[in-house]
Length: 96
View 1 (spheres, rainbow, N blue to C red):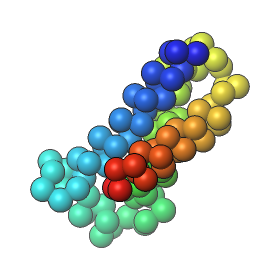
View 2: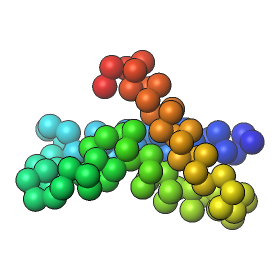
View 3: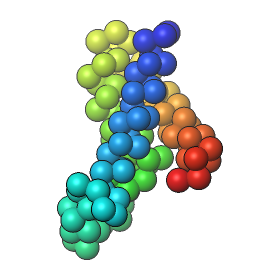
View 4: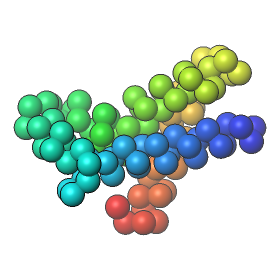
């Protein structure tokens, strides 16, 4: 259980880290501007723009790498939902 909590925290930091890299004056700002102009919002949000939405795609990838060998597919959806919830709580706490 401790491992699952650590992976969830890691996934949350990952989502916020990726989202931060695309913000103004960050290393991937120009890539983010290009993606904003050329890709659909429904693709941008889960890829890099919205930490809550990122829980779906990034959470799935992190679950597949770190959790699937131990828990199988059983906890995949709950993991992504909990990750979204954690990201929401952090967003509210830090007023992102």
